[in-house]
Length: 311
Image 1 (cartoon, rainbow, N blue to C red):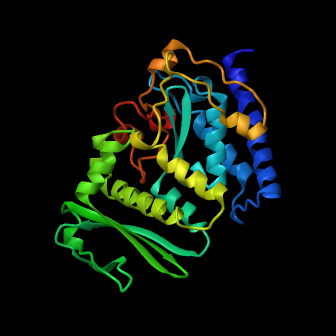
Image 2: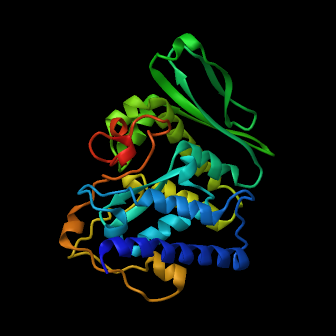
Image 3: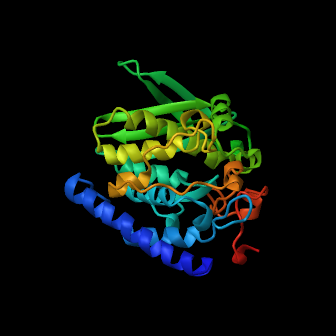
């Protein structure tokens, strides 16, 4: 069977596997998906995107990525109620692993699924904007005043804040530009041009991810949902996730995502030497960051391989 036929058959099997596991979780672990969320449609959209994703050597993700990592990425996407068709998530190849990451829109959608959440929003603060923070009677940080001005939109960004409004009140998270830059420096996918060209969207995404993590870890929501949200957030950071590069002298077998999903002892195929060297994130199918800009302008170093329609 050639690779083309294998690629055509592989998505169907993986889709069935993920859907079966989601249904099992709904029956036994009280998993609740959004009412307007069609898991089957979201998975089909994900496979359309995955067919375009390549690694740094321009090899298709569906060929080089492990079966387990593909399943886990798709399951995390489904648990959070996300869809790449709505620009809520995208996929990146790290070595022989596939990882799913959320966009700003995806984080908003995921946090809104938590119990009691009424509104989620993030904003950037430009130089000369009227911005004031303080504390309430419980010594919790609050944004007391924010008045953005049109004439300041082209000024430098000095910070960003996120708001999560719930039945019990409003939680604020504030980051200075220095803190945002430090967070960007820790991400696995380092691309200064992306952060410069799409600084507003990237800054909002960063502060909202921090706010979501702090909020989620103190919530009483389902471990399935909160675990998937936290796991996706940690995908981006060097200091929160082990290096995916296998080291022969130190490599120890671990329980795979497929073992967890199927309760079997299926072992992952050992990566080749070429795969072991390929750890840089060089494949994303993201449509212009958070906007509609050209893919080749967003990641000029090859992180995104443009589709024929983009050329």
